[in-house]
Length: 172
Image 1 (cartoon, helix red, strand yellow):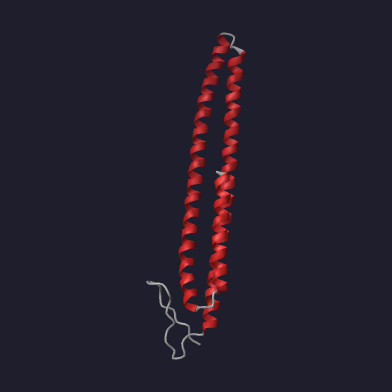
Image 2 (cartoon, rainbow, N blue to C red; image 1 turned 45 degrees about the vertical axis):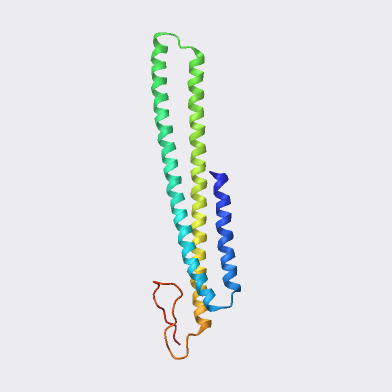
């Protein structure tokens, strides 16, 4: 999972940086308004993707934990049966060594799963923080654009570029 997560994070950050750079370089107000509409869609998509990835990571971690826990219980039962058999008869040393190896491998796998879950949670937290930063940048750019545009001279409302968006007037 680590091998897939980081390239996705890099691509998302690169797309957002490219859009932010394009927005900063564009001088046409109608094109800027269209780009703001694109920002809304992309940020919503990225936040949804991050939430889905977080839910998937959580479900994967929980599933692995439950599987490991049930395997541990099964190994515990088999170890208890082996102990009972050892009391009645001498248990073969190889069977005990194999059981110990199985328990060790299960513990190693659960540690790796926990590390992967922590790494995924950290990546999701970083992506959420970057999404919030992009949203804040978008808000500040919108405010600055409205400030610099000044609005129409006759006092009419300045119309947004998206359909279904609230009409926001900028009057001075």
